[in-house]
Amino acid sequence: MSLAIFDLDNTLLGGDSDYLWGQFLVEQGLVDGEHYERENQRFYDQYRAGALDIHEFLAFMLRPLAETPLTELLAWRQQFMTGKIQAILLPKATELLDRHRARGDTLLIITATNRFITEPIAARLDVAHLLATEPEFIDGRYTGRTVGIPCFRHGKVARLDQWLTATGHDLADSWFYSDSHNDLPLLERVSHPVAVDPDDALAEHARQRGWPIISLR
Image (tube, rainbow, N blue to C red; front, side, top):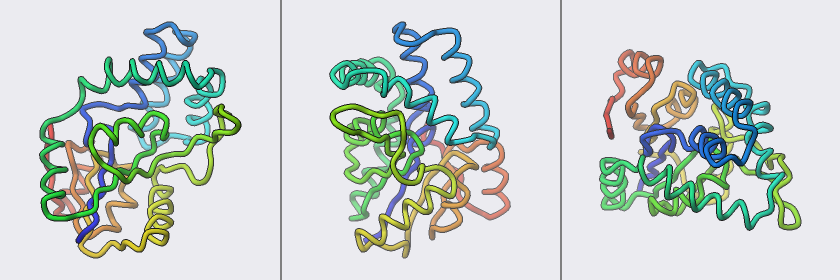
């Protein structure tokens, strides 16, 4: 039984859930629209360029969680799932997940996007194992801080190594599917790296290394 690892945003989803969460907050009038939209776009552009300061980004993204009671957050998230995520679910991604299930593989989603946003998405995709950036939650509220290593770039590798140690899994005959050059540290670690609708930098690297390039769109 092999480990099949999947990036989430722009890989299993036809969009970026972190970015769309920001758009949702703006559209619903839940944040200062002009400022939030501008910053959301700035961070997204930095991410695509490989220049994202993950700690600055997380401070920005987690602030609305810290400023809002949990009951309201959960209501917002349900609206977000219906209004934003449902539209970017990809039938071919479901087929890919099902092929690995049929092989008896263990499925794992690994994503820089925080667990508050991604946990219901992983559940919707019927993937039980999720490694995501962990927002701190104390006494029934989010604090705006994170717990542990952000699940981004080399942090994904570190978080995966922790998970492997804790669960007894290993990377023998392992797979990892991703769209982003930010995931090259983990793509280099697995037995079967696969570029999925890749950005230009990852596409070029995949061609040089002879990695498969596929589309789920």
